[in-house]
Amino acid sequence: MTPRRPTPPSPVTAPARLLDWRDPSHFGRPAPCTLCGKTTPLRSHAGEPVHKVCAEDWLTEHPGESRFLSDPPRSRSRTDDHA
Image (cartoon, rainbow, N blue to C red):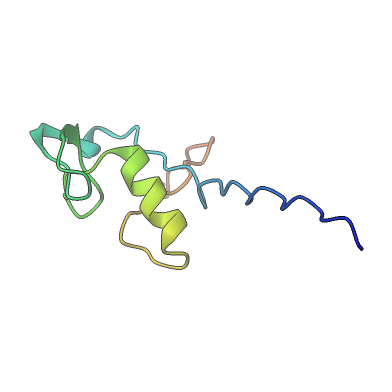
């Protein structure tokens, strides 16, 4: 008789990416989150009221989707194209 091996725990999935919502455009009047229904002042790029964690969880569950986006990385140097 072969000894039974314990079933390994299912892996914990981390968010596909952490959202960077530091820009003031990601804040508004408190409204219900489109995903969980609890009040939040946060907004997605499309203006949807949504908690950052809710959006990150949604992105993890829907890989490849772009419903909730991060701000593009800012360049450290500023150049002026005008002479």
